[in-house]
Every structure is written in C-alpha cells, then in structure tokens.
Image (cartoon, rainbow, N blue to C red):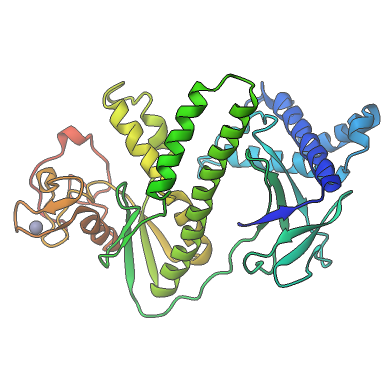
Length: 397
Ligand SMILES: [Zn+2]
C-alpha cells in the first residue's frame, strides 16, 4: 500500500465526505445483518443478495440514490471479503465491526479495467478519478506503483485526505546464492537477522515523543467538546500518522532488501493477534504478568512485524518458511544445548555449556535460519508446557 496525500477542492471534499458516509452506512447495514449469524446457520445474506437490497435501499432513500452506486457496492464487496477473512482459519482477522463517523472515514474504488483512472499532470502532482467528484489532485510524492487494481480514499482523524493504491508487490527473483536467513522478532530490536544485523523499525523522535506526551496531558485537561480539544486531538492524530507512515515505508524497504539477498527466508511462526489476546486472560496462568505482557505486546504490534512478514511473503512467494518458535531463544546456536539459564537477559545470551555468547535475538535468529524447531523431547514437534521443559538436552541432529 503506498499512500499519497489527496488534495480535493472544497467542492470535491463535500462529495468525498458523502461517499464516506454512504460506504459506512452500507457497511454497518451488513454488520447488523450478520450480527446474529454463525457458521452453519442459514440466513445471513450474501453479497449478491445484499446488492439486491442496495437497489431497494437506493429506491427508498434519496440520500443514498444521489450517491455513487459504485462506492456503495464496493463497501458491500469489502464487507464480504472481511467476513471471508474472518472465517479463514489461516488468517487471524477479527470479525468485521461497526464503523464510526470521524474514526473510519473511507471508501474504495476499483479501476475500470484496461482504462486506468489515474494520470500524472506534473512532476509533483497526479490526478485520480473519483465518481461524482471528477479528477482529484494528489501529491506525487513517490513513484506510483504500476498495476494497481484499486484505490482507497480515506480521511484520517486529523482531517487530511489520503489515497492508497492497493498493489500486491511484484515477486522479487531469488538471488540463487543458496543463502538462508533467519529472522527473529524482538521488542527492543524490531528484528534480528541471523547475519547479526539488527533492524529497527522507525519510531517517533525524542522531540516528537515529548510533544506527544505534552499533547496527551493537554487533552486530559481539555473540556469535552471544546474547540481546543478538537485541535489537540488533531495534532495527536497527525503525530501518530507520521509514525505509521514511517513504519510502512520501513517494512517495504526492508522486505525488498531481504528478498533480494537471500534464497530462503525463515521466520518464527507467530500469531501476533493470539499473543495480544493471551495477555488479557491466559488459560495457563490467568491474570499473571498481564501488565508485563501487555507492554511486550504493544512492542510487538508497534514494531511492524506483521506487515514485514506479509510483505516478505508477497515479494518472495514460496521462499518464506515458518518455523515453530519453541525454545529458539533458549537453544545455543553453537552447541545446541537448550537451557533457559543461558538467556542471561532480554539482550544477552551466554551458553551455560559451551560459553558461546552473543545477542539473544541474533542467537535465536541463527536457530531459526537453521530451521531448528527445537522441542524438549528432541524434535518430534510436540509442544510441552514450559514448566516441564528439561534444563539439559542434547541436540537431536
Ligand atoms: Zn553452547
């Protein structure tokens, strides 16, 4: 997804706001219809049925009828896709939920086949076709990816408009050097490579963080519904958007670099959403370490790990392998011993058997690169409760 700043005229902005409202209306209508539906139970309308209902709704509501049918239909199609993702076991997507005014403002448009509705008018300015609004200018801040099939127009909480072109990145050919790399996601370090490289997802700068804290304090003091409060909220949203943009850029560049340099890419098989959920009420030890885990999870989500892995799979299809993460952080990459005491601290690994020492995340990344799904019983792949893990274990290979 590459995002560009959209620059509508005031008249166009009014049209875009209507499109957002219509898309949200259709989406929420679909959410309501699916609210009581469960798999195996008949009755929730599918996309085709919803399109028939859209025709009826337009006939009954002049407000909807004046809007773009393309935009409204696309909202239903997006919802159908979100439901499919929700029921896909390999995809930990959440259930599509209500969209709120002011928070989820956006709509999607699919290009009209061979006729691509986007053009460049000068070095810094492009135009994109939006139904009922006509050609809307956008800032050509970087190369627009060729082959974009659809685009999403959205307004952020700071009231700025953006356009994002949805493109599945082109696969990058394998370098053919036979090299494999392991990547370990970390918290302090966003990702460690088995080569020893540490990758840091960009954050806000120190000055920006100070400003953010100051704004948050001011927000807490501001009177509800006041103008000042609105302005502070805007400023906070703008800072957060800046950080998100930097993360996205980072994930794009990093995934391209890795796909170019290595034939085989091994990552931990990690369900980010599962880890985040478990902090609230883990089955094994409910309520324990909740605070510490919540902090860790914020770090994981914030580090852009999910996006990085998704982009790697897009750019290196068939060359990304997921490795079971059991004990990769407790196994010595030099001698193979598994001992939790070897993990001296968050950052330091020092093997209790052979004395090998190094950065803990890099040590784990080397295990991942080797494809070691280390298990307590020596490689049969069955996970065991952590408290029964033996302290000393010879490598199975
Ligand atoms: Zn060792």
